[in-house]
Amino acid sequence: MKIDDVHVADGQQKPVTAADVDETERVLGLKFPDGYRQYITRFGEGTLAVFVRVYAPWRVANQLLEWRERISTYWFWEESERKLSQKRASQCVCFADTLNGDEFCFHPSRPDRVYVLPRDEERAFVVDGTLWDVLEWACTSGKLADDVEGWEFKPFKESTRAEISYQPPEKPKRAKPPKVLPERTPEQTLIEFFEKCWKLVEAYWKTETELEEVASRAPDPHRPGPAHLALERENSNRFKDAKRALWQQMTAGLKCEVGRVGNHDYEPGFRDELLRTEIKGSKSYVYARGGKSSLNSNEKLRWVLEVVDGEWKIKERQKEGMKLDKYNRTYID
Image (cartoon, rainbow, N blue to C red; front, top):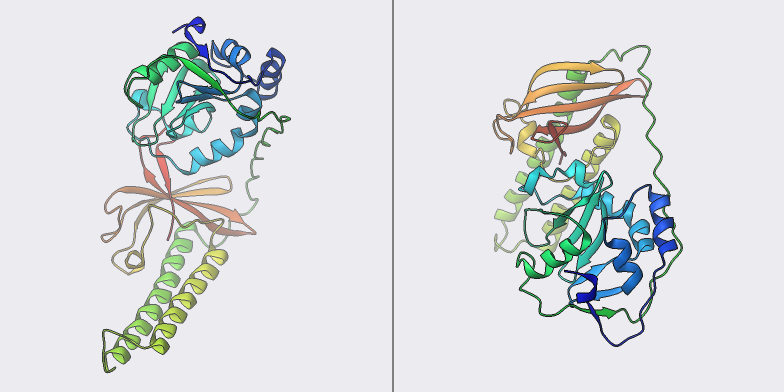
């Protein structure tokens, strides 16, 4: 595909200048893929073949941090070509998309290699070459949509021009190692966490059992009354509040997401088996094997703890994986 293959439909083009591209490259400290400057300064903002949208440079810059945060949090493309990891993807720059929600990005160190993150597939594609190679692949390969007839460019009705507001994030400062380690060891901290969580679970289950007995004596056990339902909600909310308070006391920013440790996993005999501990500065890594009832049963895990206010606080629970750092982040529920 070449620039002269593209026909501009009726409509006023929304211009993008070479100075706009230069400024964005300076602010972000990178070079766009070959062909981007030629394409965006020739056609401006709009849609190619009623399918692909190449972003204006100010949009690339202004949405970069939000896009990277989303990729760092949500990752669906585990079976990617050439082993694109979530860590590397979160360092990429998104510069185009399709009307179907597929996204195109590149790593600043390799602008000649574009990664395509399809909306409806769990595998990212890789296209090497210029922007023109990427656009031709997107429209004719059949990977993202049926073949597109013609190369018509339709300008946007309104310009999205905006000042570049991108500010590079501050590099996190390394925590200074504590002069004296806490008296309570990382293993003792985890065991205490398990015990306290288990007491909360037991209290919750006991109340739920009592409520079920009350409901069973109702005229219609399958249709408990409003008072019973209100007590159930109260018990559930009380359990969640107590659990949240415990996390605030014993953890450092622990999240509740996927890869969870469920209520049964706190039960004695079903907890993670703690194997060994490494302490590096203000952090400790407790290596473990998943408990019997865990979603990660018998898998290799590690708990990350860090010193906060003179005590070990639980940071996260990680599962062994194939990423560069060897362990995938998971969270506690």
